[in-house]
Image 1 (spheres, rainbow, N blue to C red):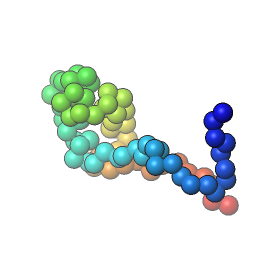
Image 2: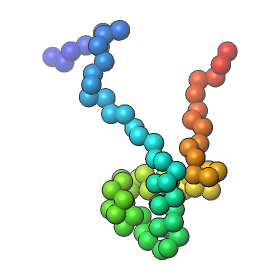
Image 3: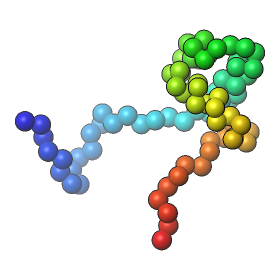
Length: 77
């Protein structure tokens, strides 16, 4: 039987923490796409997941200077 969740219990060290791309890495992705490279090629060369490369290219027009977009959070009361 699996262990049950206990409130305020110890946090597992197996939790995956997502890392943010640096503006430099985003620039590499966008410039490679401008030179005609396909998403799988960019992902293989830069050793990033294809989904990361694809999402970066889709959201590129929304960013200023390659900085991260603000994340949504819980509304303040």
